[in-house]
Length: 282
View 1: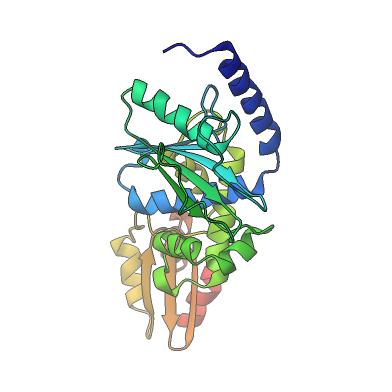
View 2: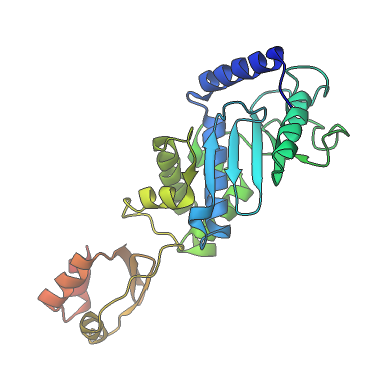
């Protein structure tokens, strides 16, 4: 069904306003990081099948689209002191945008869901979804902080998502989780999110950071020749997870990235004692 001229003008103005507000939008960026790490854990074997896009043109619920294998989830984010659905029939209200997004998605015979994400804690928007849109809409609270490290400290949901992809899992410390969040914040900001960006594209960019290890990376393989040298050193315990090498001598422990050149160093120098190996690993 063709839209009216007034509705098209409204959408064009909404998109221009969204582009301006997107500049430096910490809340939008931090929420995207939360969703990226959550989807990495859920779809680690389908990274090409999940993509993210922001500020969608000609779209009513347009802040963030997460295209998943079975459903497209449209998000509107509100980092304001007050948030309310308003009226379905009033142009510019959240309920108005959601109602028209539902119409568009149904017209395309699309599998979809709509989400309102808000930062203010004292609101009843979760319980007061207008009847005409409630079958396809939900509201979720996500906290706001001005710093990603502070957000990791206060958000149990973000911590849980980060731990799910951390090589240390439940043992991961806050600083390790913050490193992962910071990594994906940089990756996300460096991506052209106005076009669809797949999880596989994001993880490829993340792999350039050697000091951050993720459980979703395939485990590095230590060659038989290198294992023979390591196993001959008295008292060593070691394992690889992802692309990191973890070692322990009694109460001493450490870790380091495990690229091919490190393995070759061990083969070339053939350390015989724990001190020799520790000096080599750095």
